Image 1 (spheres, one colour):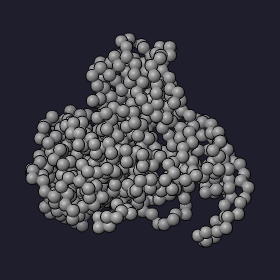
Image 2 (tube, rainbow, N blue to C red):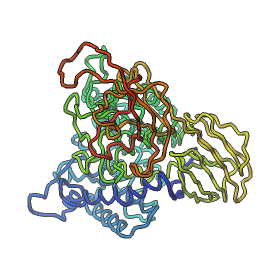
Image 3 (cartoon, rainbow, N blue to C red):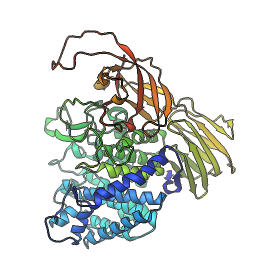
Image 4 (cartoon, helix red, strand yellow):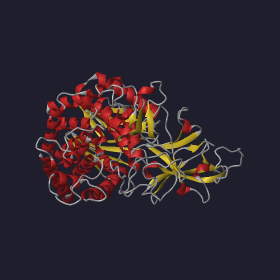
Length: 631
């Protein structure tokens, strides 16, 4: 199985170098500023109170969501990942001070959950206290800290935490099985096992996953993926973040154990998500609220769901929830699937979510965030919807911003993989790679341009380059001479030879502008088109419309010719797509009639400019749509 080469990769310039720099310079500092203080809620302060360092006064209480601990651990993970690429003594000092504080807050038996500790309540009384979620993120952050710094301090805290969990869940019961909500602890324990090689942690991860098969009927439901025993599941249901964390953890466990009963579930559910329940932007969990199984004859089993996967093909546009964390979870899940079975389809999906919904979750300036990511945003909403319709510096459920930060800070870990005498090139971006027996430079303007050049100093005999499914007509050359190796879309093009210092491999990926239509059962997308170029989905923003034009009146001819043009002055420098569209004047907007007589009006032609979806909403409070009517 291929292994990541994360800390051996350094972005040098271009797309990912710019985003990693923004994360380091703007996002991580903004999150520290938000989480160090006491307003508008507590993060680090909860640890100070739990450690007994704050006494007296009204502030000596837990404030904030029960999962705030976990979200602070994500910030620590992002900070450590950033330090691996760019040493920063001031940031490192913050991290080390926080680690000392966490150690002081931890109970002697290893339990740590500031909400319960401050309230002086026993562990594991209520599943929605998110204890395992918080501790899972602690484990992952501690492993990253140890890998980057070589220090044992945070890892010792993590081991004490895992040892507590091993004792607490030594004899699993159906009641204890209900506590696996938003299960970051699966990946956390497996990260800890990878770091320490302690077999007890692998056994504990297996025990936790197996507990998904013994959840009691009372209190079970699709919202937490426990209405149906895990090994009987056939589709993605319920809260999308919880689902994707579950499947990412199960895939990582399969990689360690080879348990085919896990892989059978993962293949079925992956097929369910990617062929029936995934937004074009890689958004997951289209429903704000719902019931599951919706419409089923099994009326007695229906439960409420929220932020959830819905029915197959239930993919709304304007009311799409698509939480940013869910797409981060999809990135993690896709990566773990690839680790088990190195196929292009997993990295294609990872890239789809990463370049579109994950990056849309943070502003180009790096300090404002989306919680949810619709496919269409209009000033007139069909109903009041939770969460801001523009990016905000803070919102009450602040899980997504540190999740984006740790993903962007560690994006290099997805770029390359190594196994035996082979090197996989998964993501494209200008970087250097230096590991044992490997030294090369990648140069490219991807995703704006499809030419990728690798200059080799040292390389394994077999080099595998990803040919995305959309890249029909890709070609390869070595030292300027085109080679005959196949470059089929959706495969890895394989070059095997004895590489010499100075060898240059050039991959050319066509980046055609493609019109996309949805499956006919996706009702909201019937007779509509979307636009894709390479990994990027494009959208129309009202900021690019002529005066007195309505976004709802724009239609896209099926024969439209869209020309790419790099605009260095727009949105930090992006490729826009330009062409001609039609304006079809609809019925008067001031009528409240639900239905009205259709009166055809002749359309007129206008100039059209589309921008990448990830960059929308950075020019004020604008309207936006990914899908446009097919003229």
